[in-house]
Picture: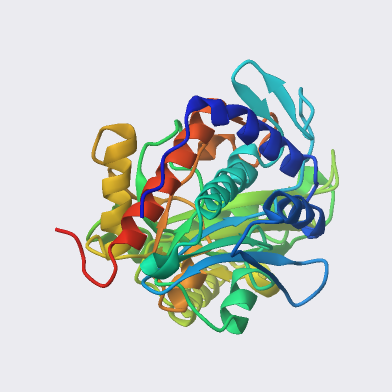
Length: 406
């Protein structure tokens, strides 16, 4: 099989499809990917030999799977169609705005630019004719990545009747700039909240032994927990070094001038490298909380969010896995350099595929620093690079058959 990589003339098609996907809102929460899937169904309609199926536990949470070919290996190109909510602070139109070689809008880097690139690669391969016995290609445009994946990839893996041999999961391949690394691992996340009660009284009495500031107690509680988690936070991963971190993502407390805070709240994320299990880390966190609460003398509670937000497992694929080797060769062919094999700082759907024993690599256009913030963008060159890379990975992996290349 040979799949020609697209020329720069593909830029218009990429921009048009990416913009159409951005104009189909899919913020999660609340979560509704139907409009995005409708765009993709129109784009892929009428292709010979392509089977389109919709998976999902509820009509408003569809995951589209397009399948092509038979025999040989099966590769899935997977990109989530939900986005982080738009939020405030935009100086451009979050529904899509072109500026020079940039396309701005919610989801351009995370993750609709990658959805468009994968869809174009899938359609180009389909237009060349069926793969026959050379392999099978799946396009997975999945729901519910932003809030844990239970109604997206987790539901898909529990329901489809044939699992791929490997998956390319789309997320930005750079942190500060595009194409920094080929990710073969990703951090996991345990989320929890702390609520502390204090003494609501005149603020001039703060510091007296019988007066407790909820805010000051919360700060001391977090510091105490961080000290008691020092072993986990300092743990070295053999391939990626020290990558765990405790981060406070939201704080609230107090009622204003002149009053000692009676309540304080913190939402926290404990991001962890590969090699940890949920039950073990939650038990360690509970011990750290209990010990710090006693040391501080705080009246405090710990709680966890519901659904898939509570725990997102870390993921890791062996550096010598066939999909990693294929992706590395494709990277070298497209970008002219060997990739740096690294770990993605956030959580990805890779963990859900790997829970189903399907190896993955993580790659895509854009940069993580642009995601979940105002004026998110992707460039035309990044989108074209993504099309080239996905096409090259598909050609390499599916042409291997049952034997691995040297």
